Image (cartoon, rainbow, N blue to C red; front, side, top):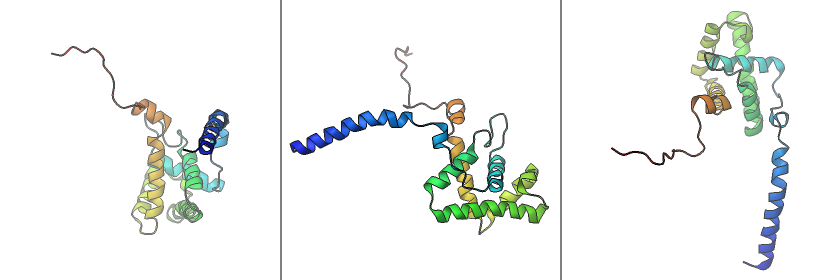
Length: 169
């Protein structure tokens, strides 16, 4: 390796080591939460839809874990504008189908009506992709939430345990 390249690499390494703690300490809940790109009425439909997929039982439901915010963040940051608009359109369709079928908005339906409506989205040809994305992000967010990782799956950073001196029969 040439001396200049070695000096450049060392300078980059030292600069990164100095800047990284400051960058990481600047994180806060406000800085990483999603900007609500959905209209408020669609955001409430999304919130109720994810709660229908993973309801509150003896464990927290999707709303309690903030999965609606997680989904908005994922769609806003990780998907193209076309997918974002299709997702918003799908959320709007949930509400419009509820209005047509039950003469009430989705947020005012009872649980069996919500489940029936979402099952229709799951089996529908035009809505299957949207519902797959919605359900997939909901399940991913739930399984990766702090609550599930610490209280249900008991996440360990390194798999396996060391049991030291164990008697062998």
